[in-house]
Image 1 (tube, helix red, strand yellow):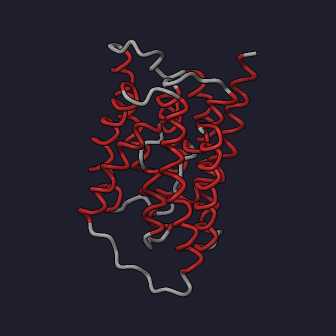
Image 2 (cartoon, rainbow, N blue to C red; image 1 turned 180 degrees about the horizontal axis):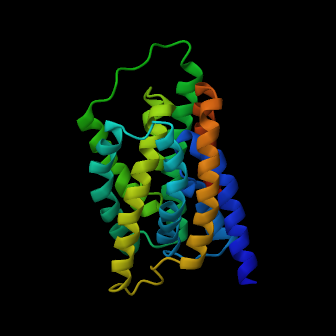
Length: 260
């Protein structure tokens, strides 16, 4: 039944967002296999549906971070300058070049696996090595552009990939998480609008988001994101870094198994 399908999406998003929000990940990166395999959202409509999830779910965590005084940051602006144009290019690539689910999963795994392994390594080696020098603003923006393209293909807005990269480079999770989620929220709005416009002219299949699924998952993420943001101050930094890396590796392995 359709209502049961929506309830499954709501519950899945609630749990995922509660776990991932403390490390600056909206949950869309882990919700994607749920949409593909459990909710049976078709390709490439699954990508704008995931972006819609980010738009609906984002305010919960952002409100909590704002109340805690963590949201105002130059890092948010640096990320947005790169991810906004990148997500538009990524959406075009997703529709016209990478439409198949198998290729889609392999590309996603190729991105997440090295990031996850790197993040775990950096977290565990942190007590033995000095912190790396901070990344410059131009480098952050350039990385955000590339990641924005990947995010547009993947349906995660870009911030969910930049979060692990920035944390792995030595930045504190408490700084990266609010900025990454803010970038994901704004970029996802632009990405979803881009897909809606492409749907008017493309003949490559269902491109418009599944509105009911995106809304149900988004409401679950809205509640879970607020809860996860409240949990962050109670979790140690090293544990947050390892958790983010383990989650990224787990999803990458699952995608490789499904795609190959």
